[in-house]
Length: 248
Image 1 (tube, rainbow, N blue to C red):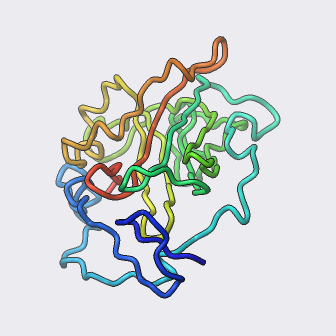
Image 2 (image 1 turned 90 degrees about the vertical axis):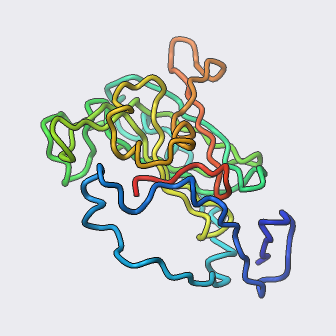
């Protein structure tokens, strides 16, 4: 197994070296505690974080190409006997590292509510229908150019109990791995023009300069006639141009 120096973007030494990742992304990600996001008041750490050096196992893996997801896992509309209800969309983009280089063979996972704004999960009990043809979970690996693509249904907004009459904007959760466990990002993708973004504490917990990086771009070039609208959502792991994590 080879180790990579992410600052030099070239092979480094055989497995013995411990990689130091750049940490110039502190103004990108939301704080652990954000007053308007109520649950962070309870779960945010009270003490300052302790720096802990990365071990080789954290900085040289994993290799998802050995057991890639099945092709059908990237099409959330074709995982059941029938078609799910709602507006079919495609979501595609490119995964890049902090130096702008594409990352091939990396695992991208998504999960989301259905078109009525309800998750296929026992904890979600709000008064919206479940869709027997939609589980809301997908996985794929990036190709040789670091690109991924999902077919899914546009999720609906849903109420949450953060404050009076609180509604989450439509969003898709992403988990993205880079070349190492230390570069994993968990974030949310939003849709352009959503009026609920201005009212959402989770979105506003992200520093203002980085918020637009969480909003997908409508992509007419990838829109399929008579079939699905296309959206583009590129993801950058680490660095000052990183895609923000979230929620905190």
